[in-house]
Amino acid sequence: MAQIEWKEEYSIGNASVDEEHELLITQINKLYQQLNQPLDTMVIESMLSDIQTDISTHFALEELLMQEAGFAEFEDHKQDHERLLDQISDMIFHFTEDPESGRELLINRLSDWFSNHFRGFDSRLHNQLC
Ligand SMILES: [Fe+2]
Ligand SMILES: [Fe+2]
Image (cartoon, rainbow, N blue to C red):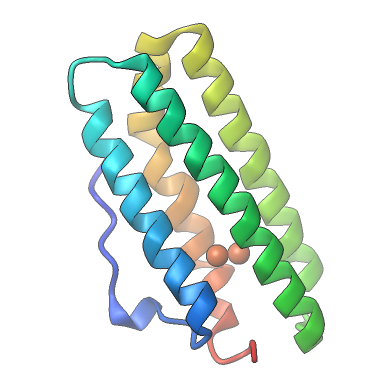
């Protein structure tokens, strides 16, 4: 997995959402670096838990803003958030049960897990939220 690079073009035009996206990218990149160090399960579990907490808060904010703006894709977008939350729970569970293969899974999937949603659903929020 390559590191995710923040680009100005990713900006959707809402300061809070943009700030959280940048922060999540930083957190995921740091975790990726950690996953490539000698295995430290406690550090990785704590980083995963922070990402899980922060991304659920982030999704709640996006959902609130989409609802307020009457954004047409709200339901599908929200559904994709729920899918992502299920996926990170599964990845965390896998890592806790079997850290070695859980680490491989995270290295292979973590970037797409965030980026596919971010580059698809979130990019369509551009200039749509107040
Ligand atoms: Fe987002
Ligand atoms: Fe989103």
